[in-house]
Length: 158
Image (cartoon, rainbow, N blue to C red):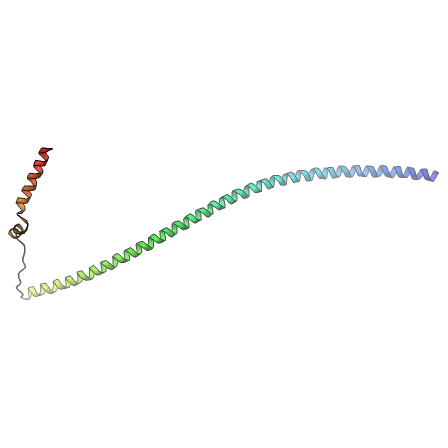
């Protein structure tokens, strides 16, 4: 029976040690749980901040894409305008080249005409005189006088 009592005492002693170690482990686990709960809260805050940053970054990205597309559209419009203006100027330059050729031909013809005049062609150079102009269109002095008289009568009636 003594042996039984010793075992009973030893069992109670072992149970007390086990209970103390369980309580110590519970304290350690509660400390660990508290630490990990704080870390989880920190991670939750970090996650919220990261989501906010992601939304802002997405908004900035979308605005950048819109700005890029606007710039590309503007560039294309300017390119089309440049091409149209270049074609227009090339057409004008073609017309000017034709005018220059005609002018050069006329100048070359004038030189030949003057050379003939100097060499003895007696074709007279004629100018229109006031009498010829008056016969075709009327006397200039009379036309000016009539216009002045009509403007004087208009101003007096007002």
